[in-house]
Amino acid sequence: EAIAAEALLRINEFNSQNIANTVWAFACVGWDSHKFFITFGTAIAELLANFTDTQKSQLYIVALYVQLTWPHVDFPQSRHLESLRSAYTRAGTAPSQLQGDVSAMLEQLGWSHTEEHRTVEGFSLDMADPEMKRAIEVDGPLHYLEDASSGECVVNGSTRFKARLLRTYGWNLANVAFFEWDRKTEAERRQLLTDKLAQIGVVVRGGLLGRSDGEGPPRLSGSREKSA
Image (cartoon, rainbow, N blue to C red; front, side, top):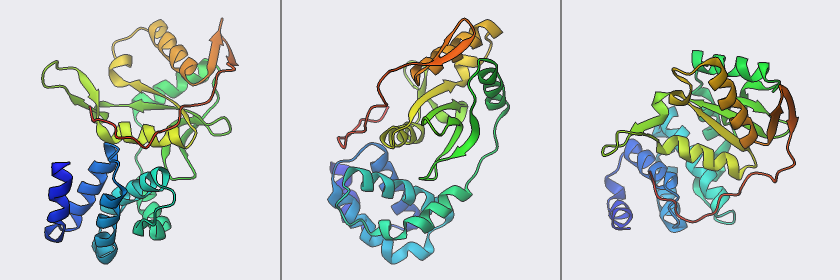
């Protein structure tokens, strides 16, 4: 709270990068004060023409968060949602070799999917069944941070935030981490993907793929979420 209060006091000293980074970071951790975002949103509205595509991409994610968490709040950037979305979707990435390998094995297991599916909101999903709103994301090293005390890989804030938003929009989502895949035998990888498919409600039995009757994905609450 002290950091948020200090940011509000110094908002007039911030440039476009400072503003974009600040509101994105607070949205990322699930900050629960809509007044904070409204105050920054008002400052952004006056400077929006000065923001780069990367900064507008950050603002787009913030606008979605505010819209989902406080649907009746008039967030200034909601009026520019389409232009912000365009900036966000322009920042495309090429599929990795790891993603291709995972996709190929998922096809072998019988799960038909679309690669690089773009959702209505503009999110890119590595592999998805759009009709059933099921998806598998492949996360390389850039999606993780190293815990200073344990040395373990921890999902970074950006990846965690994207997953939260996707689940709020009704997607069943599983993630395949690079360290889960590396140095594994083919049998171990098949089992890994069988388990990941089960997480999103797709069951593989004896090489035959079916669908479970489990409930849909959990909804995102508007409460604050601590960062990893």
